[in-house]
Amino acid sequence: MAKKNALYCQSGGVTAVINATACGVIETARKHGDQIGTVYGGKFGIIGVLREELIETDNLSDATVRALKHTPGGAFGSCRYKLKDLEAQKREYDRLIEVFAAHNIGYFFYNGGGDSSDTAFKVSQLAQEKGLDVTCIGVPKTIDNDLPVTDTCPGFGTTAKYIAVSMMEASLDVESMSESSTKVFIMEVMGRHAGWIAAAGGLAGDNPDQPPQIILFPEIEFDEEAFLKRVKWAVENHGFCSIVVSEGVRDKAGKFLADAGTRDAFGHAQLGGVAPVIAQLVKQNLGYKYHWAVSDYLQRSARHIASKTDLEQAYAVGQKAVEMAINGQNSLMPVIKRLSEDPYRWEIATAELKDVANVEKMVPRDYITEDGFGITEKCRRYLQPLISGEAYPPYKDNGLPDYVRIPHQLVTKKLPDFDI
Image 1 (spheres, one colour):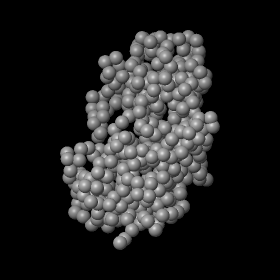
Image 2: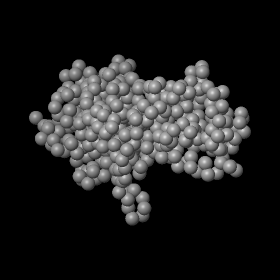
Image 3: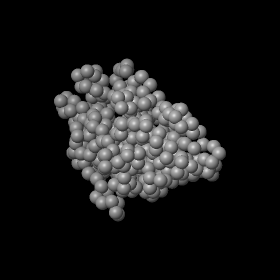
């Protein structure tokens, strides 16, 4: 019987180190060539699998695979396409099983967040029902850092480092101009329900007097009066005020301050930008000159300033995923377990996919200061090791990073076309 092949897919918003996980999967699979045949990549994630668009990786040199480790973006392409209930989307799930069978897929590695964990879990259930020998392993990633069970999520550490450094540098700029120009700077970061990225901005300063003087968390109900009072205090005492605001901040009625009234592909409220909303409040009530910025894709693609810790963890979960699969472990996810904080030590443990799927981990209340505008020392101790160490990419002679793009050479299709 031919060796079983492996399928690796990237899902949801990518990170600066998700390709390091892909590298970990491919390199480890190649080391176990006696048990794993070809590693395929789903072109644009699960959409590519449904379309039977599978990317060949056997043609990639070891050097190219190794270069994935320092390349941002999603090398195979990702997507926001959620497979929900097994019965409601029976056609799609049956198609996945058909593609697996047609290409002798025995190992499925789904690199994503909570929604992806749910899909991987359901695929494992369906494969078992159909009598198909497929091992399904979820592989964690998300800059939001909101997956349960794992101590942190690969991708978050680098985003946290980028946000902390950006806030530190922008605040020095604002402070230097505050006497006659801008007095308030607002940086919007991602985080629909969990404020981990916003919390990371707090690492820019060593105490509440240092910027950012205000952090607005999704976990804390927005109090306009208290917020304006804090802004006024910062400007009067320090000459300026730096603010980090999470996109998911809500008012007292529970409505997003930036709700645009539309929905994304996962059914989540589409947020239209909270920084300008906050800026207008400052202008109308206090009259201070302001500037605002939205970190947007920059915060999840900044591989040039990657955290060494994050990079190592991203590779490790990919490596462990393959080791788990060839050892017969199924419907699981490799997760990061913190062993100690000083010195920071960690290891890879395992979690059941059903315990990860569709559960969000919020910032604990004791990680947020009593006034709701900053991080506590407990939070700082948690965050600090995750941004530690530098892992710069190699640079070309033209001064730009030497990133790699892999060819999307597709395998020959064996099934009829499938409309999504």
